[in-house]
Length: 278
Image (cartoon, rainbow, N blue to C red):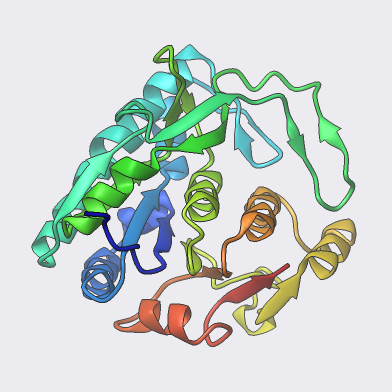
């Protein structure tokens, strides 16, 4: 007997700073509530925590175009931080909220299949940086759809650390936004919600009232060329527009959320954060 199709999923990405913030119990409760109504896949990063651990171990983090150059030592840090402490802490918070999380990482049956990156394209300039040696940084080239759908059909909440792997078992550091958007594109998600420490795309990073409720690709490119959008927001937008091109319904960038805000961001696009449109 053929299984019925899953309802459209929602992908929620949490920045590492969110996982360790006081708002985690509120977000965890919202995630569990939403997961009772529609399929949800959670992806998380851990950039700030990785930077702190690198420095504690005597490593100097190198960030280029918003991405961490990842040698073997830095990759070990990413394994410890994202597939270790943060994944466990996030799953624990979801359990406390009444959920059934299952922690995963790239080497979990290649749930995030990756290859070594050849460089990153800036959507403002169209230029591809092929000069930087990013080390063990990967691009998502596949998602283990059957594994995620099996978990979702059984009522579980997949929680993915931002690591990928190839068929030889080599692991790669994956930008968490890229991981979330890769899953969203593969599963034709109805929405992707990227939760970080900023309340959306801002004209003035110090003034939340300058939030852009909506942005399309050409508007974002113009803001990049003007220097309004810079640093880590550039790869976030690059990956998000790629997900929209690949079939994701919408991408919403939001910041700190109160009770019920996550559902509002999904069901009322533009009410919170910045909605990206193709």
